[in-house]
Length: 186
Image 1 (cartoon, rainbow, N blue to C red):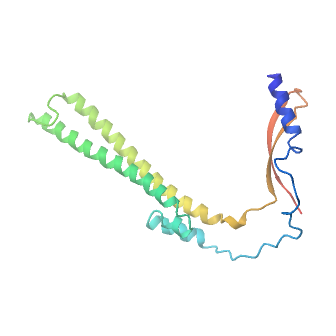
Image 2 (cartoon, rainbow, N blue to C red):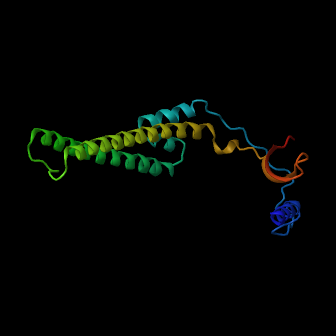
Image 3 (cartoon, rainbow, N blue to C red):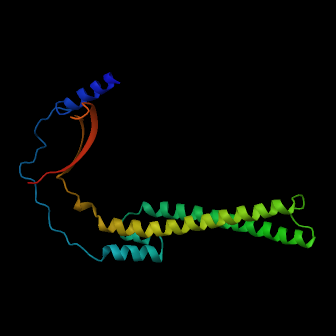
């Protein structure tokens, strides 16, 4: 373990001096262009959420995130498929249960009444779970459209950085691993 800690320590010490390419200085911009002011639409998140509530995926189209639309319809379509399948099976087993109690022949004649009761409970539980998941995907679709409209791509700050670090804990004198998220003020 000591060798691994030493190796990781050496990697972090020399991370600033290792370069993959040689800097020629050609790509350095002396005076970077100022970021142009852009119009902030305060109603964009509400519009995106409303559009997604009316028709799932429409808010993502409003945000120009077209690749999310098939993901949303795939997730909701799959959960609706399982809801319908479990609902159909629930109704079939329930009908067989009712016919079995009346002493009439039914589709599942080789099963006893307790097996049909377990089938009814299982299909009802699965049907309810599929409905819950469908509603969850619908709500997640609305939330995703709203959050995506709040965070447009041109608001990313270049002064924000992430840097992993290894440091020695002064109390236990052991090496610890950490992360730092820093903001550079100009």
